[in-house]
Image (tube, helix red, strand yellow):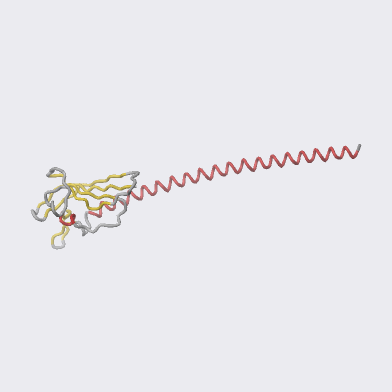
Length: 171
C-alpha cells in the first residue's frame, strides 16, 4: 500500500511537471510571437522612413538640377565671358547632357507662342519646343513635374524670349 501511495505521488508530481513544461512552452511561444510582431512593425517603419528619405533626396536633386542647369556652360548664353542669365537656343540643339537618370528635360517657348513644333537643326528657329535630355524607363510608376520660367536667347535675331524649363522625373 505504501508502495502504491508512493507511485501515485510520483505520478502526480510527473503530471505537475508536465503541465509546468507545457505552460512554459506556451509562454515562450507567445513571447516569441510578440517579439516577431514587434520586429516586423519596426522593419515596416524603417522601410517607410527610408522611402520618405529617398523621395526627399530625389526632390532635392531635381531642384538642384533645375537651378544649376540654366547656369551651366553647356546651355547658357554668355557674351565675351559675361553670363547673360539666358539659355542659348543654338546650344540647346546640340548639348552633351548625359547620365542624369530617368528624366526628361524640355524647354518650351511661351511668348510669342506659335503652334508646338519640336526643334531640330532643320526646323530652327521656327520651332518652340526643345528636348534637352530624355531617358524614360520602360515602366513608369510615378512622374514628378517641376518647371521654372527662363529666358531664351536667339543669336540669329539677337532677341530674348520667354520660356519654361520643365523637368519630368520618373520613378
